[in-house]
Image (cartoon, rainbow, N blue to C red):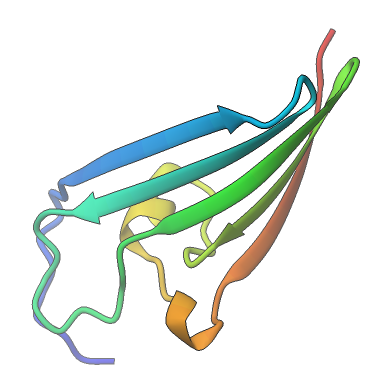
Length: 98
């Protein structure tokens, strides 16, 4: 895909929220507003919605997002999915608390 050259220095404003539904369940949301994306870029601002289930020593995390990369630099700047077209990605984490 052709788009104007992108500056290597990128700026994004991220917002996140967590709401505990019960003692064990929570819903999470995250959005990143990209401040200086190049015109014609194929990438979009990331929007993620997830659920956490705490089971004693484990936390199961289910994520739905329009940005496939997992690390911050990819997540914020290289999202390609489109929620309105049903193009989003599913991710799963398992965290063990010691």
